[in-house]
Length: 562
Image 1 (cartoon, helix red, strand yellow):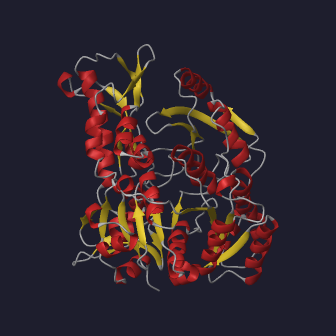
Image 2: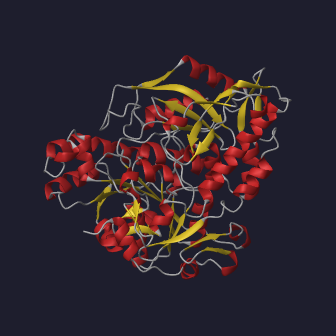
Image 3: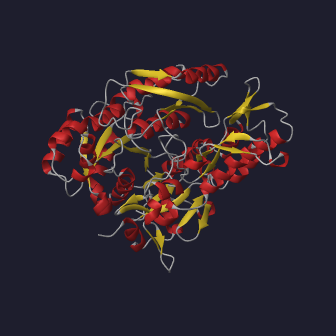
């Protein structure tokens, strides 16, 4: 059996200008990066009028070691729609060096449902992440330079909230002391790093609607507070112009293709457990402008990525999904039901029934909280039995939701035709209960307090009994409300492995509370972040990181990405 990277390397791709022509991108707006990738000038969106296509959101159950295949399904669904003669464009998040070298070997789909060039996308790609890191660290440098040169603004170095970033899992950098070595070397202070994808600059990059909006958002970043607790912004440090200069080319969406030649935008890449978890608004809007159907995804499960896509991205950008796909596997559901990874090949209807509530809660969130039509895509594995598949289908139908078997990993677009049929039906007709893009609702209203918004997500989406705010979080909430940030949506930083803030609570736990230990504002992004449990904004490397398996031969051919 060929590995993901071997499949990708063996595929003959179209030149990217051919893909651009297929997508309807005029040559004048195309900036080539070699022969197989390009950037598309965002001015295309304002220079040429386009009627937006249908928006399809792909999300999933809570991830497990067994895997779900959300990106694979997204790509395979798009290829299936293309096989049916539909004008379709994909919009995906960019992977990054952090996950590639840390946790898994790649994040560009798998099997015969991938975006290519797979190696580039998973590594340096077009340099967007470098630009984001450079802009972030420029602001950090300007902040420390201001303090070093007299601190005219009266910044309290104990109240600096802005961190440096690096695109690599490195726990050693979470908490550091810098500026040591005497006056010439700066002002000693406690500092620390986040991973690039968790940075506010990444969130701003993803949520900006234009270059002007990008610059204004960057200027609103709060970097810390003065001795009398007044916020200090990037604008106060005269930083936004230079930061925008670093980001102006990165803001242009990256155009690539699937293995079957479907146009795909890969742009922006935050993790949904610590950031908003979606590709850029710029890429989504461009995909909707160029395609009659835009297939996009949000990170991790529907409690994280989809919640943020719907409550933050759609709220800020005025988007309304026409259909939602919830991806699951029988194996993952059995894992939620208590079966260890080593035993998932065996039929176990009892465990499957115990794990099914995880899927059903995600479905209910989409249909009952957000009032959107939904289809469940089951990524089929050879070990899945007919009895197991029938049980999943029956339980979903009881909720009024259809199930489509997806075999895109093995068959590409051909394996997603049944899923494509149901998605098109939902886009055209809505579901039997009358749910459609027009019935879309948020999980909470703008007029609630920040604490009430957090409680709404915890109780309505997670099914928690309530929220426990630690004393420091209560103080921070009061401060943010007083500073005028109370009208913003909330971005929940929570483990991806459970509906709760405890990663060990699988399935659909009940009788739990969510603990909020810290609240901070991302004023430029336009949301308030609530950190729950032990979630980290700088992951570390495990005992056997994916980097161990990545190698290059004497010809320069990469192996080990998967």
